[in-house]
Image (cartoon, rainbow, N blue to C red):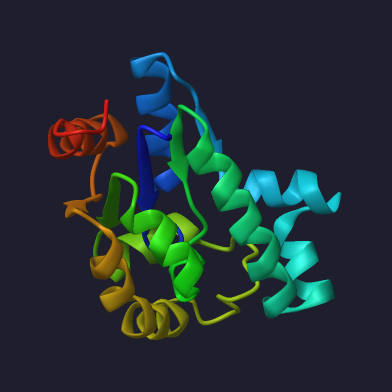
Length: 166
């Protein structure tokens, strides 16, 4: 079983923090978007655009199962919590919610190509937060401030995950 799963909005730093902690703990990290890309043979955003959200969420759920079966730190796609089966898997794992202010997220995302974000990053993040905040809270044992230096955020996550994560 994975040592830790990270959920949160796009740009919050899930992949960065998972890599830092996976390296520090000597267990590695897995990113569900990377697993989706391997499974479908193209980048996850391209698959989402081509096949649609329902097909993407199905492959993403399989990727989540695979990742959580491993021993590493798992970074999830921002919308993984929108399916009930994924929420059940995350609730059975040590899951933490990384979060920070939308202004920080907008600065981090910049002009990154994300299918569910579009051109108006702030409006999209506001909407995604409205739709997903209660879902993140439902699966996570704690909400971690992800603003600031990644090493500091990793310390916060490690402190919050000490109980049962390692």
